[in-house]
Length: 73
Image (cartoon, rainbow, N blue to C red):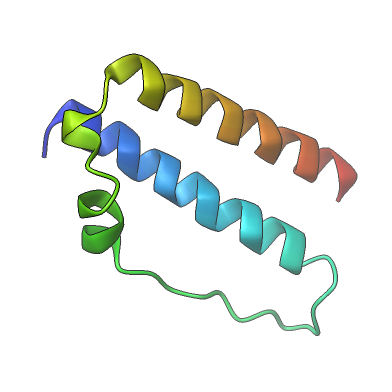
């Protein structure tokens, strides 16, 4: 796996975690974590052909949002 795909996979994970962090605050407990197909999530966005600056911006914004959500928990 190349560096862009690894960073892209971290972005995908952040997207899934944002959903989880929001739902865990209002759904019935215990909350069941949804799964996802990591291979498809890496392949479909085509991170390999995306400029690294765009992936870095996405990574930054998603993780900044995770910080905001977690401060509210």
